[in-house]
Image (cartoon, rainbow, N blue to C red; front, side, top):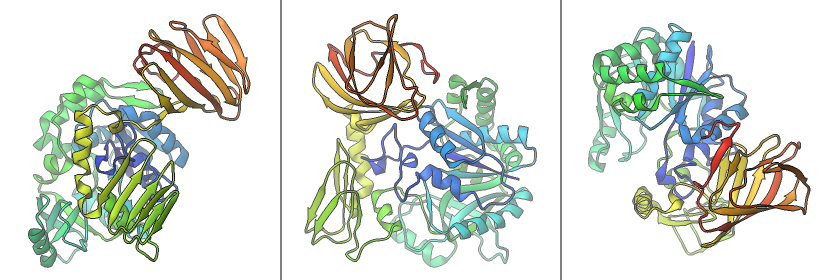
Length: 469
């Protein structure tokens, strides 16, 4: 049996302003109708003898991840919550311990949630080739057959003189400069490091015990103290954060004598920058990719993405333009790796645009900030069918709710009222209140906040069906 383990803990800062800390790239629909996480799940459908999917994600993404996974209809094992990111090796260790306990002898296929693979058949065939080696106890990595001297990828050197379809790994090497990358390509011995692995869960744990015993001990402790929380397995924060932070490559693959490589020629791309989306999608006759409401004249070889308004461009070539409701990025395609510099500057200045969009997802639905000033904020709120906000109060703000679509069940103090379209109510400062939607259609309302402080942390919850504190 092959048990897939999807790693969904990344932030994808190079794809800002679409990808943000609380809404990273794997949860976005960037190359089609599905999100990158969902495409990763669907990619697994053709793998034979496949077990349930295990997913490891950041705690703050848990409701989005759960919703997107359930939408795929795939059989799920566990959704494991990391209290903080410790890189890929500890995440894989947690999954391996769970899998060996439930499925002794099973293989685990470790995949990042934010990659593009265009050739599904080639991917499935590569996994089938790697399966035999993994069953023999080898730790298989999938090396992408390079087609250009990329400097943004790590490389793996393999002993390709072997007549077998699985090559012994000679070494892992860091991202090279262009001259070195060209030498790697011409040699025929080097592959891009895809970050995809296949091995017995038990074999991985044995190698960790040899090469990273402190990590293994911390992960065991975190799992021993883990608690079930709704649909999630919540790792113990103190124990997990005691683990060294390291990748599977550094912790195990570079040290073990059992590392093997299967070539992967399947249109792989890690979508590490905006230029990658131009590479993996079909352009128009002028070489442009246009998403959303876009109008151009004399524009060539550009990627233009509009989400909330008309975006126009004249006389450009080789540029990236990305628009959201609260930010616009304009960059040369040659410089998109430097978007991370802008993100660091936003972090330093404590700008909210680095972490959230104006439209913020919650387990009960979403809200979008329409307008804001020092003493007022206007939100458009959507509550899903059957969902409810927590019973809560605020110390510093009052709220006015106006229903514009659907029917709301509102609790304010001891009073429970029903509001239909065009009806409103007022929640004074300090009053406990709850908003519910018991109808079969989404509820939409406008919320006007007034007060001396309007921060999202001014919430005191006394009851919440989603387990939030």
